[in-house]
Length: 180
Image 1 (cartoon, helix red, strand yellow):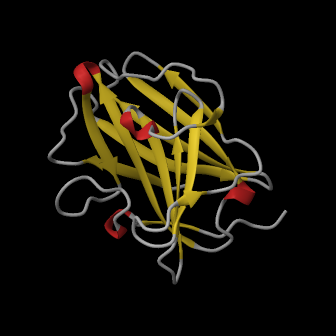
Image 2 (cartoon, rainbow, N blue to C red):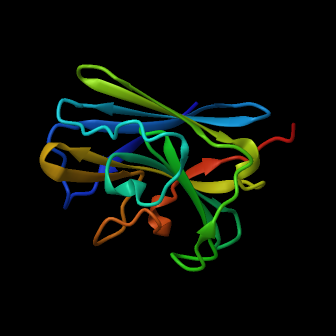
C-alpha cells in the first residue's frame, strides 16, 4: 500500500509535529482500513474518549479526515475521524455546497496509539458508506498542540488559507470498493 506524506500548511506551522503520513492499509468485504502516523507528538493534544457516535466540529482539535470525489463529478464526501472515537460523514453536491449528512450502515472504528515520539491513528470505515466508484482522494489532518496551536496537513494545499475541500487537495486515488 502507498504511503501519502502530508504537508503542513505554511501559514500554520506545528510546534513539535515533524511529519504526518497517511495510507490505506487494506480493505475487505466490510471495511476500508486507514492509518495516519504522526512523528513529533511531544506536545500533541489528543481528545479524550467521547463515546462512539456522530459529532460535528471535530476539526476544531486533533482530527483525521478522508475526502472522496467520484471520477467525473463535482460531488464528494468527507469523513471526519477523531481519537475521541467520535466521527462525522457528509456529502457535498459541489465545492462546499449542498452539505448533508452521509449515511453509514454502522459506525467507523477509531483507535489512537500514542508513544513517546510518534502516534498511530487507525480508522475503519464501513465499505457501504463509501462511494461505489473510483475516486480522487484527499487525506488530511488537523493537529492541535499545547497552547491551542493548530497545524493543517494535507496531500497538497491550494493558495491562501487551509481548505481541505479544495480540489487541489484531492491528489490521491482510491479504487471502487469491490462487492462482497
